[in-house]
Image (tube, rainbow, N blue to C red):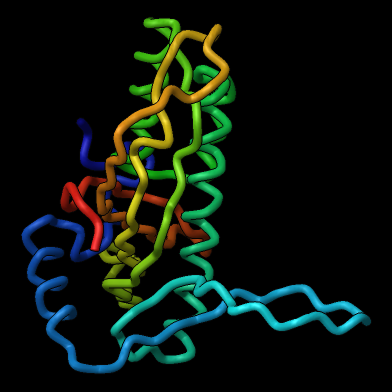
Length: 208
């Protein structure tokens, strides 16, 4: 699988190498700072309603600055857009694959297009939903170094893998499957003032 996009061969998240990321995660998870929760904004109305417990947009043990919080919000918006495109294109059996150009870069972009080629050659499509059950911010690095390092955010997310499968187009319902979860690592990097998912990999075959 290609490790860099031919469009931007020189600009990569500085700590994207698996070994470096692994070290960073070990250091960060050793922090004793309290976990920080960031609730999603909810719509308001003229009629008061009982306040529901807000769902955290993400959790983190990092002590984020205001600049870092803004970067995380923008990176997560990019991640959500990528997940939305993935579901749309895969459910359509690969139709609209060009939409990945708007939400992905580097190895993720190459992998998505390769998977679409395989889906179309086998005549299958995705049934169900690929979704993120949680978002844990592990790394925020906003340094820029002579055009060789770009800002990036690393997110760990639990994904219910039993909620989607690949079948022939005639299938309309998700078959019953044994529960299966995995924690995935996403790297969302900033290219020219926009955030794209540039790396995605299975971190561990379970969720906390």
